[in-house]
Length: 119
Length: 107
Image (cartoon, rainbow over all chains, first blue to last red; front, side):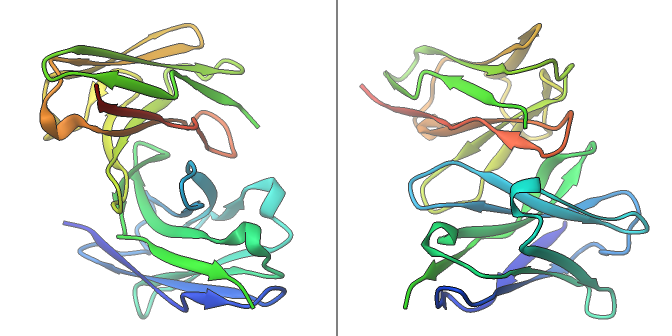
């Protein structure tokens, strides 16, 4: 059974960089058949896909976030990471890491981590 | 981006009711649509993919259908565990996008 666990600071100051890590167990981030994604959910609102990493094919980001987002992978630690620069209060959300099946359907999710942007 | 519009936003229902939630895509997405259930404080849980394929382990009272760009999630005989918020998601084209959610609450 694939399990994902997010970690990182719960509070980030405006204009700084949000950095989160997702540790994967029960599966390998170097598997070439899966999309490893970050998805976020502002408090009381809906879900927003941020981007994914696909081994041997690279990354893909939501265009409106593309200039601020980087998703990277560390195969030695079996984890992948999210960096979001120049954050504002609008970036306050629960951030989920997830893995797909069937080319985009998110079947495995982390428990989520609330990141608040505030001074 | 492909816009996914769910209706209604809130549904007040009783145990045993038949529940129907609709999701409309702003352009053709084929059958590349998934439905998720989310409970407060939890990650979403996949119910249906490819518009009508039931995910393993999901009760058979959940079903999905499609007609053009309109997709429907049906719960046949609502159970207490089904009170939650439901989201659709298209994965036909990037960026993958979600509907705004439908909250199923106690009448």
